[in-house]
Length: 359
Image (tube, rainbow, N blue to C red; front, top):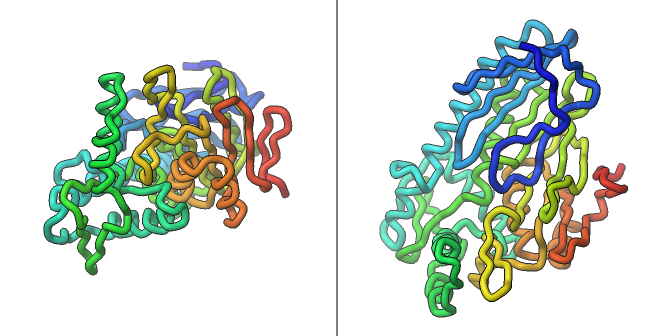
């Protein structure tokens, strides 16, 4: 059936800071085949079309869009399904919520013996350790017990006690992760790995790798708002919208490519207590929520890097965060402050509502 393409095409639900925007002028005569069981949608034109599929994965909606030239649509659809199957397999390996995953087995053995794990978890831990050190512990995948403590606090609308926070902090610290060849050990009983702040970006990178290996270079992998963007949408750029953390309007629009984009924000999950708003993003060093910014958008080379840094920079705040970003190549960041102001790294330009990379 023929449908009109909406001006703003929102992806998924929940704490998503980046949305896709349909290209202006994309003909309403294009055909959209909507299939609800994970098969692909096709937006067709004379020069090609977008083949898309989405599944609930990794606690969010995982979407893959591929621009396919005429005749390559079936191959694109098959590849997208293979990509989503691969993400599902990866989730079984690294998700702490999957009882037989490597992560769950490592967590269950905390304080005990080392646990043999697969390559994927070892790679993920290596990337996580690098960003934990770079951010001085502002990003830390051992923060799982703190996440649990503050999730319970939000469910009861009450702050945890100082004693409870201090007790949990004894089980936090990336330096307490021990790697023994192909095995991993958590040194302290009650420790818990939690890849919620990097796992989706890591999965998006794996998805992008498979797409390129199958000969597709024009695509967007959307892991619940963490994006890996490659190439173009035919003759046009992929267009992105940056969500405003305190308003239904967009903060900015952008046309980035060949990069990854991730957002951390306090607009979906938070606790209000004693008249104060407490984010769900916890500083692993203090045990208390980070409160200096409302959102951080990061542009980096890989999804894992952007995902981890979005959390780490949110915790660091704009001063220390921008100081860190300016020392790194191929990383840019945009901070929305609690008071509504905006700060960004030197490599970005924000003119009106248009966000661009400086040449």
